[in-house]
Length: 136
Image (cartoon, rainbow, N blue to C red; front, side, top):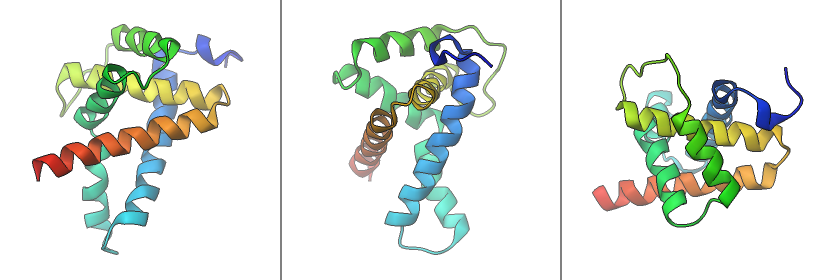
C-alpha cells in the first residue's frame, strides 16, 4: 500500500470512498427518516448511493464551483481512468462519474482532510434531496 494517497489506484480510492459515503448516507437516513423499518431505510438510502445520484452530485458540485481546482482536476482524471469494470444496473457514463466521486472521497479521507470530506458528502446529500424534492 502506497503512503501517498494521491498515488493510489483510482479504484482503490473509490472502494474506500464507496464505504465512507454508504456509512454517511446511512447515518443521514437514520437521523431524518420517519420509519424504523430496515427495508424502507434501505430504499431511502439507495437514491443517495446509486450511480446516477452520485454522478449528478459530482457534476453539480463541479458546475457550481464547489470543488477546488485540484478536486475538479482529480475528478476528471478519475472519470477518465480506464477500467474493465462494467456497470450492471447503471448508465456507463454515470457509473464513471460515480466512481470519480467515490475516489475523491477516498482521497480526502486518506489525505486526512476529514472536514472537507464531510463538506463534500453533506453537499452531495443536499443536491440529491433538492433533485428528489423538485421531482416530487
